[in-house]
Image 1 (spheres, one colour):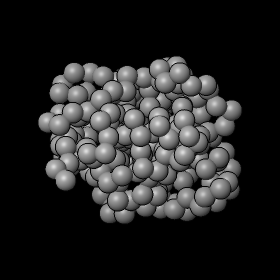
Image 2 (cartoon, one colour):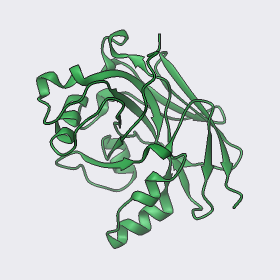
Image 3 (cartoon, helix red, strand yellow):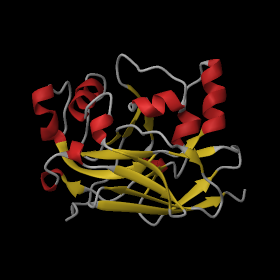
Length: 216
């Protein structure tokens, strides 16, 4: 059921403000073009990994996201061939230092520290795209300590997957092993030491992580 090839995850592109309910939740505006940022490969942890909460932040949030695995290199990809570059789908969690992010936004600073720290990108295994006939008919969900916090469908995204691939590939070469986090719906909230966070993409794949506060 899962992609068995050993894909080394390279770049992680993350869409911001791609669900209207989350845009409203964050008191932001719907963007005219996709807004994205990068997480380094050192941010990635896999299923059953541990999210480490840095001591520098007191307000660390979960954000569930549909994750798209790129399987073929592409640059300036055309919309009609965008899905040809996809190997599979999974689910990810964009862990965010919200207080640091908001302080940076007020000063016009980049989001690198708030979004790219170690363990900030938990990612599940990937399901081959051909096993999911229509990704827009699926749902992404997230629970904290078995309490449902987020739930929505990729059909609600402002920018669809092919539009995202076209836009990103105009500026960055997409490589085999790159992953795109496609944005989060409403319901983001705080993680605490000792939490167990679980995310899913429909009935296809789940991702579970422990949460621990850094000791140093």
